Image 1 (cartoon, rainbow, N blue to C red):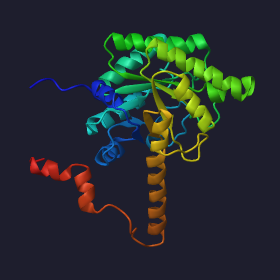
Image 2 (cartoon, rainbow, N blue to C red):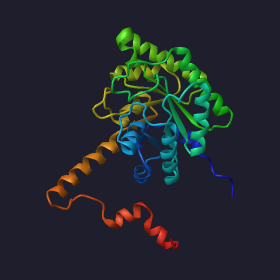
Image 3 (cartoon, rainbow, N blue to C red):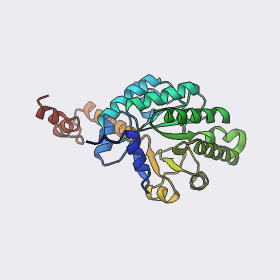
Image 4 (cartoon, one colour):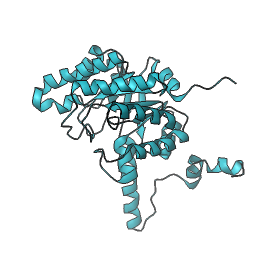
Length: 292
């Protein structure tokens, strides 16, 4: 049999399709498997969601790269769809970025997102105050591209938070111009997907797609800064990926709160998976059929 394409190649094949892919973000192996079973062609490991689910912590750079890799291996092992990992700032200087690239590739990821915030970073919709200077931002993506060329086969998603971080110092127009400049530079370096975090309007989103060459990612966070748009609208604007970073975590937490309230009141929750469905979800019946 011919060798099967790797995760990065499968992700690139998806990105060559002329469509806007819906990408619900996962936080553990079970949520990733649900994404796959729902028919979604790919998923993204949300750093916010992993920090919350794994450690009960905010997304302020508190998780280590080791913890993210450990979570990522479990997720990649649980599904056959390509997975993009959250590489944060690359976890250090250019050499650290390259090591992070190789570690993520070995863990089974198909892609990695790298950003230009000052470490420790934070969620882009919770008041980003500072990004690194242009030279440092460029050095990070350059290092990632070099690592990819050296065998760390990952689709590179290059993100900028300059729109938020420079709002106060340069004003809205200046902050957006700086963000677009950085994204153009990332594209020229060889980044595969470009990500403008936290645009404030449809006009800003459209400018991003029209003025920055390459593939574009949108981030649809319920209650966040960016307007919530339908995938059809985003595709028409020029977006190729639309991430939903907290939808699964938020709905899961809501359902667990409701179930706990029911239990506290002495009732069995009415809405839940059946035991049979839960066993099937984790492969219990398949294990039994193999004598496991």
